Length: 51
Image (cartoon, rainbow, N blue to C red; front, side, top):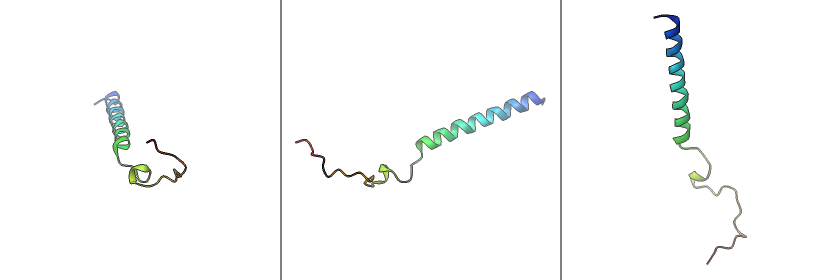
């Protein structure tokens, strides 16, 4: 193998790792936040619901 092929393979692996990390972060569950059934620190006591 020549040096260009080694560099190309290294860049390809780095690109796959980067895209995989972005996808993983997008679909992985987040700790905290409203998805964990918290009240989010917002006071809704003065909001009148529609009837």
